[in-house]
Length: 193
Image 1 (cartoon, rainbow, N blue to C red):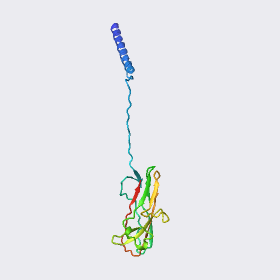
Image 2 (image 1 turned 180 degrees about the vertical axis):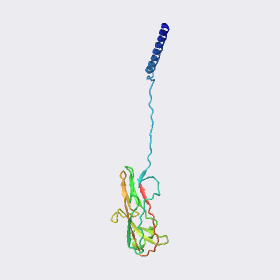
Image 3 (image 1 turned 45 degrees about the vertical axis):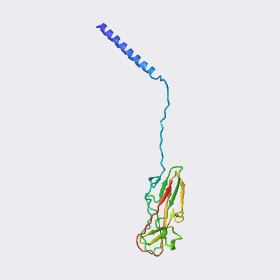
């Protein structure tokens, strides 16, 4: 029995040494390469023009975002003038465009500017209509009545990178020829970036 055990033990050692030599040979041979080459991996990202306006992302060509209302409320037909501020969740137009962008904001004349009552043409650039041929003149300003008059030719310019807030103050003027009804207008605000 002893001899059989010794032979078996000896074979086991031989097999173990053979395995160890094979593993050693693998590690020695594996790192030797015949040559080396370089390849490149290209990563790209194309950023399209966009700004955040009143907390919504606006991309180039976007339109129809509602910026708020200029609500003069209910007035008697005999009012002389009445004012209001832009109302929305911020009570302003908040604009945040990327660094190194030039931002231009303009306000068109609205839908009824050709029908400003003559008595108010010196103090107003826009008019609201009741849809039946009657008009009430109004003017819009930046921040307050002492602020910049926002005529259709006015352009507000600033650099991107910092959020800008544009508060809108408005004043409506009675021409003494108004009739009761609901008067409306729509101003298009263009934000170029």
